[in-house]
Amino acid sequence: MVRIGYWAEAYDVALAPHCPLGPIGCLQVDAVCHNAFIQEQSLGVHYDKGCDLNDYLMPESRFECSAGYLPIPQGPGL
Image 1 (cartoon, rainbow, N blue to C red):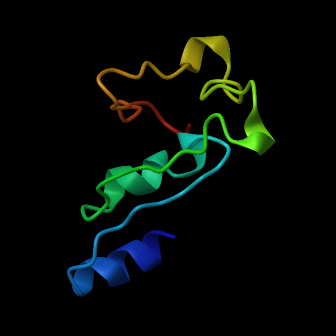
Image 2 (tube, rainbow, N blue to C red):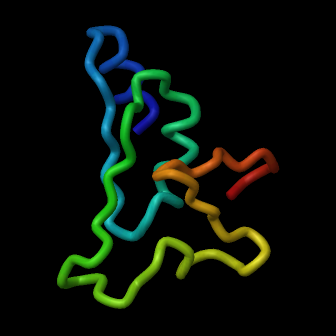
């Protein structure tokens, strides 16, 4: 995915990763691809009713969404 992001950047094309299970799969890609401008989410869609962005994370590593933005994790890994 990063390679595709870099190829898109070479042609001045924006990157908008879509991960229906939350941002965990694409957040690091967003951090390294300078042309990533939005992280698409599928919250509240029929296949993830009742789900939350943090359902796949341990309590100590939960995301804090502020004004529609997620901070890039500063530690190693996810």
